[in-house]
Image (tube, rainbow, N blue to C red; front, side, top):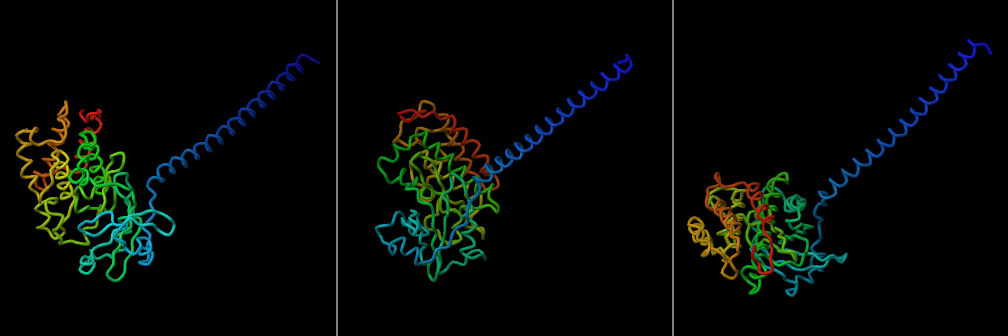
Length: 352
C-alpha cells in the first residue's frame, strides 16, 4: 500500500470510529432523556396525588328517614349522647356497620326555618366539603315533613364544656399545655372555615359545647354553619357573640366568631363559665391590670413560666375587648396561638 493510500485508509477508519462513538453517545443520551422524562412525569403525578388526596372529600350522602330511624333504633333515648340548642345527638349505626353521630334538629326550628334562599340539602352538601383535622366532618343528611337530620362522624369524644365545667376530674386532665393545644386547634379550625373554604363558612356559635376533644386532646369544631336553622334563637348563644350580632340582619360573621373564640380562651384560662357574657366583664379588668393570680383557674397550679398564659390572656382580651373593625383577624390569632403551643413544654405536673 502506498504512503498516500495508507494515510487515507487510516483517516477513513478514524472517521468511522468517531461516527460510531458519536452514535453510541447519541443513543445513550436519548435513553437517558426518555428515562428522565418518565421519572419526571411520575414525580409530578405522585406530587399531584399527594396534594390532592388530603383535600378529596365526598359530598354529604342523602339518607331516607327510614334508614335514620333504623340506625337510631327509632331515636331511642338510650342512644342519646348529647343535647344542644339546635337538637339532640344520637349514636347511630348505618346499614353498612358504620358508627356515626346523628343530630335531630328540634321540630320548632324545622317548622319556622326559612333558610337563606337555599334548601337544607344544598347547604349541608356545601358544609360537608369542609375537610380539616380540627373540623368535625359532616357525612350526610336526611329531611322530610317536620324532620331535618345531620349525619356526622362519630369520634367518641367529649366536649370542652364537659372537661371544663361538668366532669370533676376534667379540669385537672386539661393542664395548661393541653389548654394551649386546644386553643390553637380551635383557632386553626376557624381559620380553615374563614379563609380556606370558598365561599367561607361562618360558624355562628363558637362555644365550649361545640368543641370536641379527642383522646390526644386535639380539638374539633362541630355545628359550624348551622345557625341558619335558628337565626333568631338567643338561647345558648348569648355571651358567645358580640353586640353587633343582634343589630345586623345577617347576625353571625367572621368577627363574631373571633369574639366567641375570645370567650372560649377566657374559659380555658379561668375555668369559669361564660354566664351570659359576665366572664368578659369580669376578666377584662383583671387582664388589663395583669392580675393573673385572680384570673387563672384555681384548680391548676400556676406554671413556673407564666408568660405563655399572659400572651394567651392578651389574645383573649383583643378578641372580646374591641369592636368588629378593630378585632384581630383569625389568621393573626392562629399565628400567636401556634407559637404558644410550640413553646409549651408539658411536664407531669402540668406546668411549663
